[in-house]
Length: 322
Image (cartoon, rainbow, N blue to C red):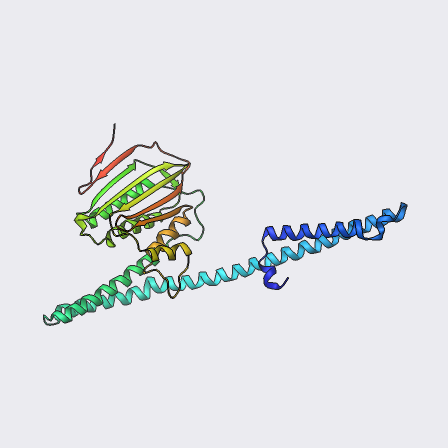
């Protein structure tokens, strides 16, 4: 086996190699060697040699296999460390250099819009430049969200999913007052996770509005939190045109190529933050029927009473069913 093959050893492969070694050893020593015909002290001596020989050779084999796995682990650690350093540099560039430069660009565009003569062509070009700069700023802000996440995933930390969702709904309502929202939420429901989960919820809600081709007053969003199969389900559905299949295909493959890539970072942000918090997310998109984003999380240990309440748009009101 070559070096690359050794580095790809898994616990299952190691067990298989050890089993094969033991099988061959027994076959050779018990059936093929002439010592099996020995008697008396010669037989006793030969059995001792074979026994200690097996112990010695198997120790060498186990050491070699474990050493190969250790080398693989060290190599993975070095790659991970280098990737982490690269990400930290990129985060600093996005958080400071790029954002500051974009602020200057946006300021200059606004000055040009104010001082240029009323020329429709010029203002159209400036509006396009401003939209592009604002789009890059938005991507920078989303990348910065990832930098707020701790290196180690939460194990015992809990967060109130209902409270996070209500906060993000209120934020969305303030941003889009004409939006129709229908929500069925518990008063409180704790899950395993941390507050950074709000970014995934926020992104899913804002995507539902920003990528909807209808006017805001014609858009509808429904949100529901339920207990199911020992976990917690959060569903966000919209009446938009649905996420394009090529976008979801990239997300399912977990990679991007020159011919197939995502148009933004939003879906990746939702997926990363969900998995980081020990959950999962599924995107169900049907053309003409909108998109449903389904989050799945683990229930926290301190579970409050599950009391449903509803919020109905366009003006949200809270009702506690009897």
